[in-house]
Length: 170
Image 1: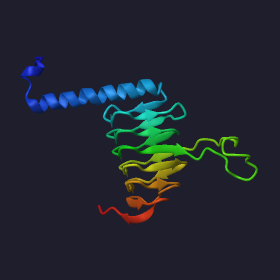
Image 2: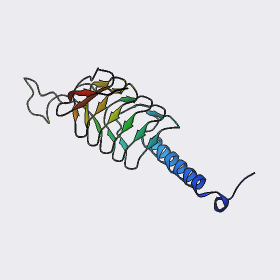
Image 3: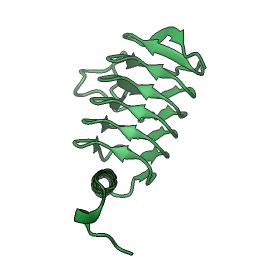
Image 4: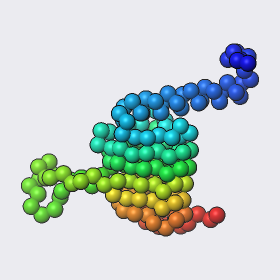
């Protein structure tokens, strides 16, 4: 039997509203990413998130992505990960080596990939510079800059560049 919204208990109505908003955001992101990104239906993406034409990838189940997320490079986000607000996935894409005339005139490097194995937390304002990967359970502190692989499972990393500062106790 179908219930009218006015007849639903407040908690059910709130859940329904949040579900609709989450699905609309995911639908909008799917449209703007033009099929280059697969997003699990159980994942949530906050407003103002952008996936640029240079990026592609997948967002696994039960992933939450905060406001102002930006992806410039290919990526894979594993199940159960949390991406805080203002996080960026960018690439090492400018050749600054010997022989480069200027930054603007230098050649472009091939885009790397950002990979989160799953159960990861990336803190507010962090920057992930591809190519890089996070092992399962890795936590990245707010404002950190990840420039390579963080390969200790359940490790806690922070700083510029991000370094191991502790580990999660399970």
